[in-house]
Each structure stands twice: as structure tokens, then as C-alpha cells.
Length: 408
Ligand code: AMP
Ligand code: ZN
Ligand code: ZN
Image (cartoon, rainbow, N blue to C red; front, top):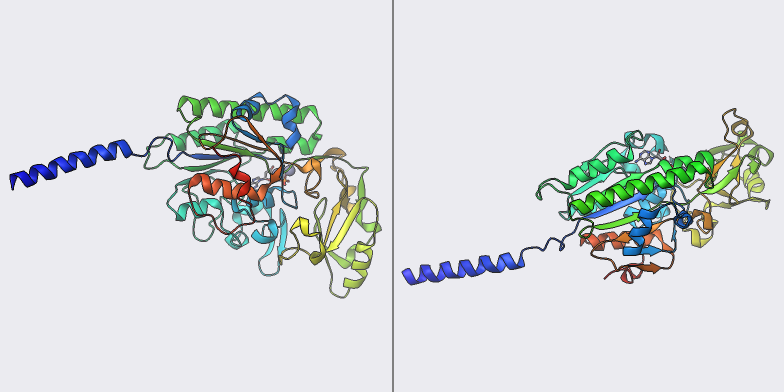
């Protein structure tokens, strides 16, 4: 009997020793930090104003560019990044939308709105949550909404007044929690560069200053991660949602000169324009809008070029118009408003427009070092993120082959 107990104890000791040697290594389940720098055009990287991003690229992976989804707007593309679906498939088809059942959506009030706007797809933090991965979102479109009954474990309602430094501090505070509470998937979002590029143009000194500033924030994040031995041991993926084209009030297509405004519902204007003809005026409005003209092209929703992957979702208006890069489509009334911006920047254009190209950088234990990869589509980011988290992805439009080249 004694012998049996001794043998059992010996086995237990052996088992515990084996557990110790096979305990998860600190890098076996590394955290994943997904950072979005709104409006960071791919070629901003070449301006020499972002040394911290350059250092990350030198030690990690940098894509020549990343092609956003159409329309090249903030909400559609952020949701594409975390679902791997084109906007036509995830349902956030514009920043402003009309749904036949749900009514109106404007991104400025997104968090107040019904989850049903978002439930056409399952974002990564929900899939991660279902598979036991703790999540934290320091802003991301959709992250302050309960989707399919789930929310991130930690999140804050969107507040544009929170500084970049405060956002980084929050991410670090989440990471500094004990292991049992620490999130493994985190997002971090910065919008100042997008604001300055809208207000002053992508080539402005203000945009350059915002670029330097966001780069300094990234430098601060890296320094703080290094202090925690996490720079080497966490996977960091830095993206943007779209680029920016320079606009000028002179380059405007005035809608009134094309169609009788009383005969349309203008769902969105500016860049990715959506028009619903009023009942009884369909043929007249189509004739006017579809006629070939300079600086703008319109399609019936089912007839957009296949490469745009856009046109089947019920929230897409009957007619979709896109101006030439750097042009705007506006009503005379809007165009004549006293506060109308004369010069600045916009996005939302065709995703083939080089000005709309986005940023992709990645660094960490999963990634090769000092690798440049060719341009790819932003739907491919989602399968990469799911792989990094070691979770089963939802069905998506991404190509998993894109990530293979980048990974160690
Ligand atoms: P865009 O006009 O497409 O460039 O939209 C960018 C703006 O969307 C940002 O400047 C923010 O003000 C706003 N925004 C970004 N994320 C969120 C969010 N999660 N909730 C509400 N508004 C947001
Ligand atoms: Zn944006
Ligand atoms: Zn913007």
C-alpha cells in the first residue's frame, strides 16, 4: 500500500515537472494589438515623417499598400477589417445609410442605434469572445454596440475628445491586469490625421503635423510595450481604413444641373453618392443620372463593376454615383453654404484610386522581420487576425494565402 502511495506521489511529481516544462511559454499565446490610423494614405509612409512606423516596418512586415473596400469610407472599411467581408456582405455599406426596415443610420450616432445594423456579420471580437479569448476595444466602429448578444470584455463608448495618450494608457492598463483578466485581442484607434487631412488637404502642413504626432504616439506605445517585454512578445498589426485625395470646391459636379432634386431621395452626397428616385420618377431619374458625363459615373445598384463587390445589399440605394478622384458631387444648396470647405481632402472614391490606398504594417513573434510584401486587399486582414488569435474564423471574403508569406 505504502509502495502504491509512493509510486503515485512519484508520478505526481513527474507530472508536475512535465507541466512546468510544458507550461504555456510567454510567447505561445501572445496578445494581438490591432491599431487603426484613420486616413493614413499608403504613401504618407514615404514622407520621412514617421520614424517610429519605419522602425516597425524594418523589424517586421510592411505592405507596399493595402487596397480598401469600396466605398473607401471609415465605417464600411473598419467593419471589413474585423469581418473579412466586403461592405455589400457585412451590411455597413456607407457611413450614412437607409434600411428598408430599420430606417436611418448615421455614423455620428452609431452607438445609439440598433445592433441590427451590425448583425449582418460577426466582428472578430465577438467570434473571439465565443471561443474564449478576452477582448478589449479602445474604439473601433461597431465596438460599442452589442452584436449578436456579445460585447468586448472591455470597451468605451466612442469619444473623439479622448487624447491619443489617454487611449494608449487605457490599452496599457488593460494589458497590465493579472493574467486572468488580461485581454488577448485589443484594438486602438486614432482619427486626428483623418481630421487634419479633411480640413487642410493631404499635402498640408497640418496633415504632416498630425502624421508626426500619430507617429510619436506609436513610438510611445512601442516604448511602453518594450518596458513590459511585450514589444517582442505581442503581435502588433497597424492598418488604416483608406487614404485621402485632395479636393477643391471648384471641382464639384452640381446635382441640380443634372436631375430635378424634387424627384430624388439623396441618401448620401459628396463622394460615394446614393440616390433613390421617388416613386413614379424612376425612368426620368435613371435617364438623367446614367447619361455619360465628365467627372462622375453612375450605375444602377446591380450593375456596378464586379471588382467593386458592391450592389446587392438592400441598404444600397437604387443608383450609386462616384466622382472622379478629387471631385465632389453636391447639391447647389450644400455647395453654397457659408461654411463650405474650399480646399481639403476626401475619401470614399473608387478603391482602385491610388490616393485611396491604405497602410499595413505588422510586427511580433508571428511575423518575418524586414519583409516588404506587395499590395493586397483589406479583406485579407481578417483571416490573418483570426490565425494570430488561434480562433476559427467566420466565413469571409479574404484570401488566407496573403498571410502565409508574412508569417514566420
Ligand atoms: P470619415 O468621415 O469616413 O473619415 O469618418 C471618420 C470619423 O468617424 C472620425 O473622424 C470619427 O469622428 C468618427 N468615428 C470613428 N470611429 C467612430 C466610432 N466608433 N463611433 C462613432 N464615430 C466614429
Ligand atoms: Zn476613415
Ligand atoms: Zn475621413
